[in-house]
Length: 173
Image 1 (cartoon, rainbow, N blue to C red):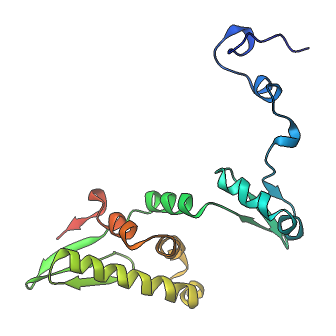
Image 2 (image 1 turned 90 degrees about the horizontal axis):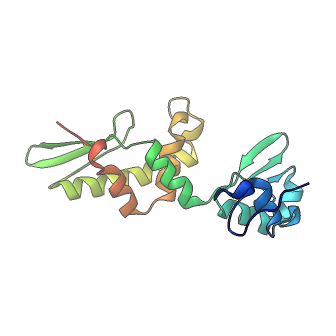
Image 3 (image 1 turned 90 degrees about the vertical axis):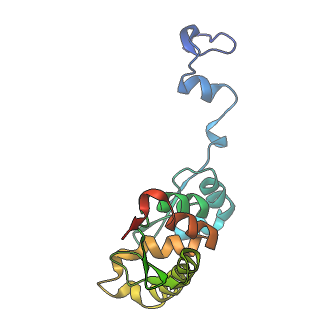
């Protein structure tokens, strides 16, 4: 039997609600968000539920042919990728201009000033992401670059600029 909770407090008069207090305070199991769908057909039949669950930020999955897929909010994924995969951009002033590149990736940009070099690098990132999705994702030496391709696909030019120019991720030579 559940002890009576005082108004505004959890069990035993504390200010911290317990899980059962929260569940009994107006929620029901029927109101809880379904976030794991055991088949493609069930996910398709409940597409609104799939998207609503992902929109709340909770882990949402569906299965198809024994493979589990995650459904996430695109902006949440983009922000997490940018935090987990710093650009590590290297910028250099040389020969009256600037160059910028990402170590370990076949991507570089150059221009008369730093802004032009970063703009060129963003264009190169967009080209690389398109090539990665078209054909490079199966090349052994490019498979590990999924996070970069996804980040580029999910970002605006301004978001990419911010990612590239983050103080901790720039190395000047």
